[in-house]
Image (cartoon, rainbow, N blue to C red):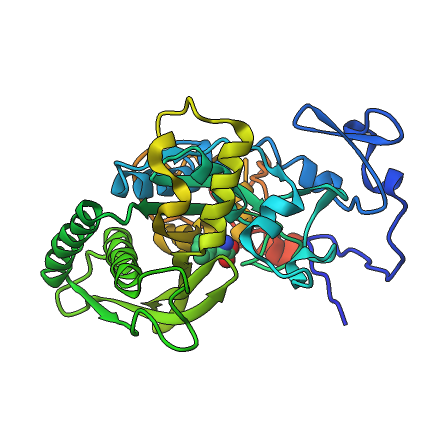
Length: 408
Ligand code: PHE
C-alpha cells in the first residue's frame, strides 16, 4: 500500500501511465513528436519516460553554485585533489552505451529498465551515474580527473531519496613502466606516513580475493600498488572531510568488498557515524575494457592533436571512485532532508557561504506569514499568555511562533 503525505493530502490512484503528451507539458515540446532539453530537440518515442518535473531540474546544476552546500563540498573535495583536472559542466543526456555498455554492464542489468532510469528516447537517457563519462574523459588523455554532475534515477519518495542527486567521479591512471611504478610507490609511501600519524582507524580487507580478483591482463603487483594508492587517497580524503574529532574519538573507516561491472577488484567504503556504518563511496581498479574503449574512442575521434595523446590509454592501469555528494553534505552540514538542497527559500540559502562548512539551522517548513493584528486591550492589561491561548483556540498547532514586536 502507498501512503502519500503532503501538506495538503494528495489522492494517489493506481492508473495506467498517462499518454506522453499529457506527461510532458507543452513547455518542453517543440512539436508533437519532439521535446526540448537544455535547448536541444529530441524526438520522443515509446521509450520516453522523462517527466516535466525532471526537465525543470536539468538547468539548475546546484553543484556549480559556490555558496550552496553541494558547491561548497565539491570545492572542498577538489581542493584535496588539487592537481587533478576538475570537470563540472558535462551535458546530462548520454547514450545507453555510455551509461552501460562501454562500462561492461550486462544486457539484463536492472539499472537499464525504464522503471529505474529516465529515457529521453530509445537512443538517449539521463545519466544514472557519473561513470557514464569515464570513457570519453579517459579518451582526452587526462591522467587524473574529477568530474561532478547531476545524475538521475527513478526512486521512492522519502527524506533520503530524490530522483536527481549529484555524484563526483574521480580517477587516476598510471603508466606501467618502471619509472611510473616507482612514482606510485613513492606516493604510497608519502600517503601511508601521513595516515599513520593521523587520528583515523581503518578496518581494511586484502586488496584482492578470489571473489574480487585481479584482472587477467594486469600484473598482480601493479594491481596491488594501484589498489593501495586508491585506498590511501580515499582514506586521506575522508580524513579531510570527517577528521578533526577528539584524540579519543578517531575517525573510523571500513573497507568492504563490492562488485561493479567496470572495476575489479572493487570496494565500498563506510564510515562510522553516530553509531552506524554509513556507505560513502564505491571504487576499484578500472576494468581494462573501459580503458580499451577510451583508446578506441580516441582513434575514432582522431584526437592525435590532443596534448595527452601520447598517454596510450589502453596500456595504463588505474583506479576510479564515485561518491554521492548529498549523502556526505547531509552529514557535514547536518541537513536532515535531501529535498532541502533544492530549496530556493532564503532561510535555507542565506545560511551558507563559499568555502565554509556550517551546521544547518532548522526553520519552519511553512513559508513565513506575517499577520499584523491590532485590538483594544483591557485597562488592567492583557498578559501575552492570554493572547497565546486565544491564538491556540483559533489556529491550534498550526501557529508555530507568536512574537510581540511592539507595544503601545
Ligand atoms: N558509479 C558507481 C555508482 O553510482 C560508483 C563507482 C564509481 C564505483 C567508480 C566504482 C568506480 O554506484
